[in-house]
Image (cartoon, rainbow, N blue to C red; front, side):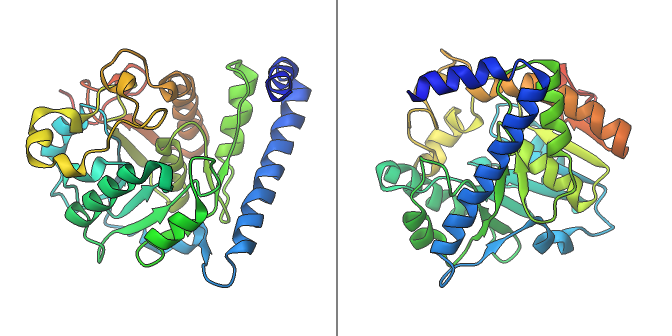
Length: 302
């Protein structure tokens, strides 16, 4: 039944009006889901919105640098990691790059993926300065997560955020444009996201007020920098294990393309154009070594 409804939704979203109605309804359902979780934890946990972090933006920051875990991040870190004029956002296991992060997102917590939590906690403890980095937990509502496990593991050192998925049900121009328009709404209450944490980070950087946003390690391939020999030999306890559909061995061996890559290849050019035309914001790839440079101008020339 569920697969039938999914297929029906896909077909209906080929029409502009149906796509808009279904997308808007999906967003409302998602808000209701977030509200339900928040109410269930209301006596012991506060949830945070983008407006709660607006103070992080300071005028001396020239640009915002967002760090993924693609191979190229291990190259560009050497040119940028100790420069104080940049604001740094990281997510996943990019903390192994030893960047001085200002803001960092994590999103995995369940007993069935306990080994992943162990690696994640070791990496965070070893590489993040919790006195200088704002650590946030996102996607608490996802099926892969157990809210109680997330709470018990991160109640003392992470902010739990309200994050809102802006869906798209096909790759047509009008569907993607509709999603991008809704992503870019100035929303002080919800962290708007789609496809990947890199989109969450881009939208948050825009909200903070940055006019230049640079992507590192968003390579649109399946090679992770932490699978290099150096990291295996020196930080093996901090590297995520194979977890199907999260840190999948087939992605990491480059047998299969990471599923978010197909989405980002369509979304990034649209975000690039909208950010520049409507907000005078430059969205850049750090280096030509990154696959995202196929769609974005580069921050570095090499």
